[in-house]
Image (tube, rainbow, N blue to C red; front, side, top):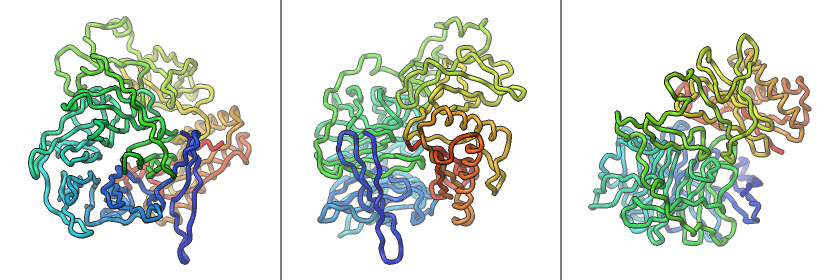
Length: 547
């Protein structure tokens, strides 16, 4: 599904309000829209339907959040009116803290569960309904919940006796895994149970929704077959243990070129999901403009014995003579899936007498297929020297290497990231409409729009060559700053920096009319501005292929 955005602006009094109400047309002709008035330039995640025409969700980095613009998530609410339109979202400080907060849903009609990650409140808490208000009740006991890391996401299943959630665990299969906990008392729940290797991969699985009636699990994944960024997948529970599942199937109907991070059901016929479609990395809440038949995967397959019996990487016993070995081409987001093999099963290249070297494989970021033709080079004594990707010698290998393939943006990779065990995978971004890359090699003199450093000039020269070789595209250069200082000055500086990049490219022969610029100041952060590392990440220039 390809999304075409048409934004609508409404005016209230003397203030221009960006309502973020837009239509998006898919190639299948199914019209998709954002929840009218519900979206913002901030990150909206984990929508939860609680009935009474009410949707709760977590909104990050909004200035009204209790922790301010650096707050990673407060509870917000939008309601659907009698005409079917979604009202302007409102902040729910009574359900929020100054830390990370996410709604999990209704335990029963009068009890709401919220996850808090803050100094004063850490874990899952009950809120009791009184009229139209929710009042804090108590913390529920879920053994070990404090040991999980990252931004927990998930939902209570229908019936209120199961919580499915995603989080990072030192006993998991990958970055984020899916878990389930079952209610055992009025305020007690069981030890969270990992859903196993058919569901969880070495990649990222997040934000589950479990349909208790159909025994189907909906979740976002970066690693299952067909994933492009994060996509929504569906799997069916094969028994009541939640350890045996069908092979997950990608929900094609709501998949896009962007990244789908979550889905929730308003009714058996209606859904709301989150999708990231642009460079800011922030998600919007989407739904179909009119009810359409949901084309949910149903042809579930039983996994093989090998797929159902893998062991969590982190819990593999030390000293057992086992090591992770990449499985290719089932890859995603920079790292391959792995299996464990005995260390005595060495290939010729791994033998102690072999010269120390690395291997590198270039992979199309979208299709996850290996590229047949690409080059690898390293800068030595001011010149780029070609390396053999099948035998990159460790000796004298420092700094960065450059990976290039015709029709793709060049990739710069720190040599410290090269894997000694198996091949390193370099995800390459194809130069096509919608593609977006970070111009991470571009530097400026502090507080100015003056390009700085030889590496910056060499990088932009390479970018100019690429644009001249692919003259059928127009691109947008977007400047961003951190959130420190005056917002107006930041926006002006970001626009000037984007203009400086454009001017350089024009000097190198790229036609002016093919280059558009934008300056966003600090309005689209990638990370929290509370730390220097976060601020450094937010100071950036990006390039997006528009047509």
